[in-house]
Image 1: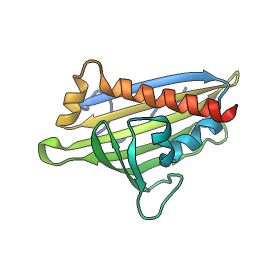
Image 2: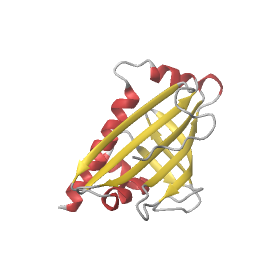
Image 3: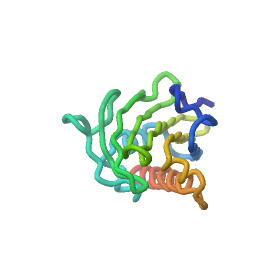
Image 4: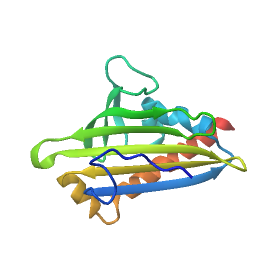
Length: 169
C-alpha cells in the first residue's frame, strides 16, 4: 500500500502532534470519494468540525495545487495552501495535502494535513488521512484524552464514507 509523502519539518516522530486514521471500505472507489474531499464546500455537509470554508482568489469548487483556502476546525481559523493535489491515475492513488497555519506567537499552529485514497482489489477503497502539527496548540492537542485529533479525523472519514455511500445508492 502507498504512504503519505512528508515535507521537511513535518515528518511524524519529529513534530509536536501526529494523528493517523485509516478505513478500508467495500463497495466504494476513489471516484466516489474524491469529489467529496477535493471540494471543500462539501466538508461541512458531512463533517461537523469544518466551517466557514472559502477558497481564495476565485478558485474552486475543486481544490488545485497552489490554491489557498480558509476554514475553521478544532476551534482554530486556519489559512491553508494546497501543496499536493493528484487525482488517481494508472493505478496510482489520489493524493491531496495542505499546509495550514493559525495564530501568532505562543498560540501559533502549523499543520500538514494529507489524504491518500487508493482503490484496492475486490471493489474496495482505502482512505488514509494523517496530520502533523507544530506549536503549543499542537502539544496541547497531543496530550488530550480522548485524543481530539484522532476522534475528529475519524468522524471526517466516517462522514465522507456515509455521504459517498448515500450518493451512490
